[in-house]
Image (tube, rainbow, N blue to C red; front, side, top):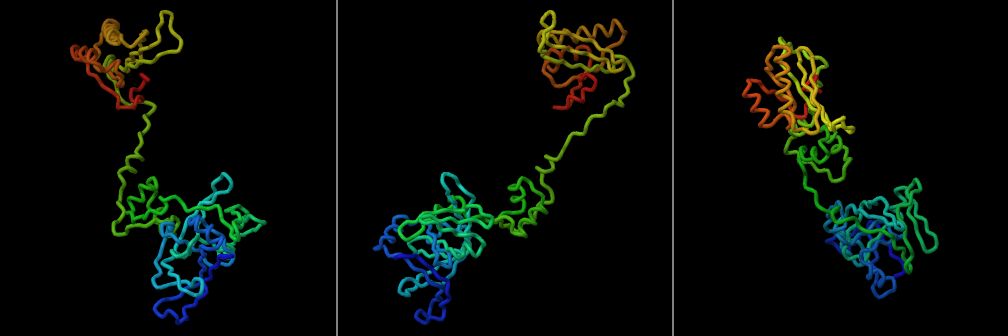
Length: 348
């Protein structure tokens, strides 16, 4: 064969085959010709056909969307009918040099298993506003804006395009999903937006199981939108006496050491008077000694007992030695909420 061609001419009035509907005409390559041998060697290749008025794909697996067309045929060489099993959409990936372009999508593609090759119709492409440019032994397909979509080279009397069918995962059947599943797939998108996407067909393959209504609330969304209210700049808690509440915190390690190698600072603050007692240390192991010193200072200098110690959840304060000492002297230990250091107030 010297050229591959196909026609969608309606020949349904042909009475030679009364039990079938003849949908059009397509030529199938003869394997005894040079072009036929080349086609048989590359059965998955795609060829550009200037005489075809429909796209042809011979393998069902290449279709993304598919509708069966029972009883329809196309005419082959000599007028013999060739079955057309269906029509649908075929995604392709175009190679231009070493670069991979955007995926191409062929619509209304005829599924003809008897075809020895796949055809891309020039007229179908130009009807969509694209341009097909022949330059000697090469051909280019360009979008209306001039962007290069695909390219090919001449092989015998045919132009073979540098395209291939999309990844296998593209052709996996997609079962209808519930609104809640689509909500999670799209990163917990608002349900109104999801319904708009489905109604306008903005997402290919977005099938919704309408038998299951959307949940009124999403637990993950509720948890994700929770936030911690900022702590007030000024506390309204009334402290009656010195020693009723003491807050403590440790800072460090410092980049610059003290005279004796100190890198940690521990501060005990009486909330009633805002009086601070500071302790410096080389490590975190002296907190029990600092607590004992502060309690003794409070008793001798103010004549008051230490009643409540408020600290964060640091292990330097929350350990068996500290807890045992506080219990033995009737001092209550209060802790901030996890990851809420601001709750420790003026100690921070």
